[in-house]
Structure formats: C-alpha cells, structure tokens
Image (cartoon, rainbow, N blue to C red):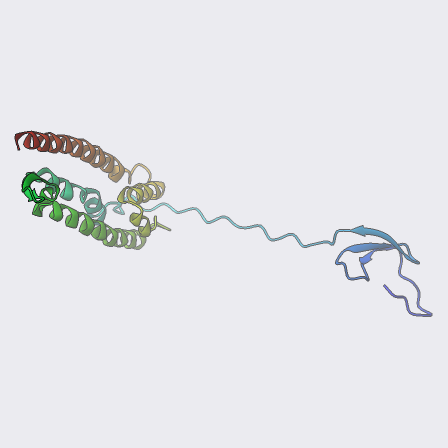
Length: 209
C-alpha cells in the first residue's frame, strides 16, 4: 500500500500484501508490520444431495417379460451342456504309426453350439436390459439401475435393478433376485455333475482304448 503525499493514511487493519503474495498483511496505520494472514476465501456452496426417489403407484407393474427373460437366459446354454457327450477318437502319429487319443475329438458340434449360444445370450441380455430400463423409466421409476451394468454380469444388473425397484415399490421388486439365486445354484450343481460325468466317461474311454 502506497500512501500518496498529503493523503491521510488508512487506519490499522489487514490489507492485501503490496508485494503481491496473495496474503493479507497488517498495516498499523503508518507502516507495514510484516505480519501476514491467510486470504479470506469464500466457502464453496454446499452440494445438494440427489433428490430421493418418489414411490410409484401400487398398481404400477414392476416386473415385465424383459427382466424374466434375463433371469432365465442362463438356462439355455445349461440345457445344451446337458446334451454334450464327447467321445474320444484315435489318431495315428509319427513314423511308427502310433495311435494316440485325439484331444480335438471333444470339440464336437454340440460343444461349439454351446459356446455360440452363450455369446448370443450375453448380447441378448444387454438388449433386454436396455428395454427393461426404458420400461421402468416410462412407468415412473426415477433413475432406475442403469442397463449397462449387465455387461459386467447379468446378476449385477438383476440385483441392482431389484434394489431400486424395491425402494420405490416397497414389498415388491425382489422376486428376480431370488429366482436368479436359484438359477445360479442350479447351474452350479448341474454343471458340476455334468463335468464329473464327462471326466469319468473320458477316463473310461481312455482306458478302453
């Protein structure tokens, strides 16, 4: 702060540092004292939390064909897996014409059909999740669980979707979660039994060969 000649000096107080430090320096009325203070910043405005989701009418449906199809889709490749029965074949290798088991013999048409159907079911789940998300919005659900979570897994989308629907429609909305848990347990049990049977069959065929 520079006081021009014949001008009265300002009273004591905190003023911006004339050196341009951005801090406040104490002016004692006639000279700078070298005492600094932090500048006064305006506190940022508090962030307003997202508005709570309003409840929907008890007459508004919370289930549709899209969500139930997403829940049931894992059963399709599971059914195909149950019909996959690989058979070992022999192949002749080496100059001595030694017969050995062909590991590629397990890759039969049902196997590739199983793999293909699994990828198709993954894509169909994404489409159905979008349609389900859009339907929930049209039915009045505020900020429904986003459909893109289905790319992480079908189960994540079903659980997240059900939690939010249950929030806006108490006592409803959780049925897909329980059905999904049942499907996952059923898939795990049947897949384990099928793999055990396949391994035992291949072992018996290897011994016979």
